[in-house]
Image 1 (tube, rainbow, N blue to C red):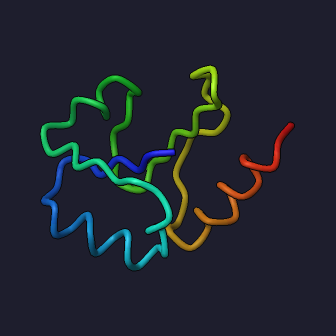
Image 2: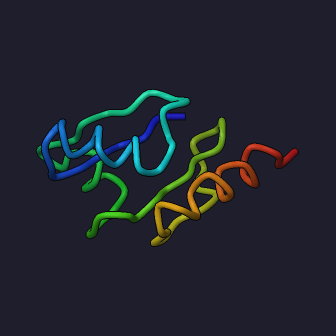
Length: 78
């Protein structure tokens, strides 16, 4: 699992990770939006969750407080 912070600075990414309690996995600073473009993301707090095969299993806007629960649900899938 990798978090991708797009179109903002590295310090802003660190703030978001801290606020969302998301420090349990690597974070990528996508300052140029390369990964964002690949997945058609258009706004902050848009999340794309991929399974081990690279299939999108969840997509959309989530409040940072909802992210840990959503990830837990995805990780508990068979």
